[in-house]
Length: 68
Image 1 (cartoon, rainbow, N blue to C red):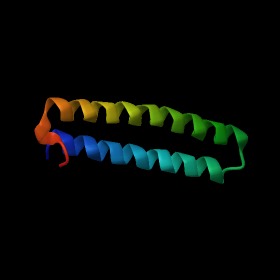
Image 2: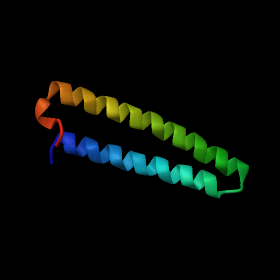
Image 3: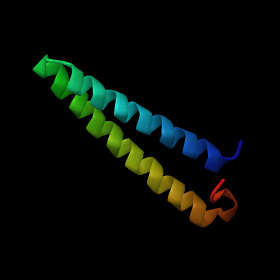
């Protein structure tokens, strides 16, 4: 498995976590829990943004990883 493929899998996993956290936030009536899930989702979005930026960097530095 290439670095590019591993990064794409990490990004997909991260997106899945964000979707789950968002869903949990919508499903709960507890305002404290709702806020916690929203905060976690925001943090995870920052992680996702960093992973995507890293993937773009890898693709510019190592063209063989692009579109795999």
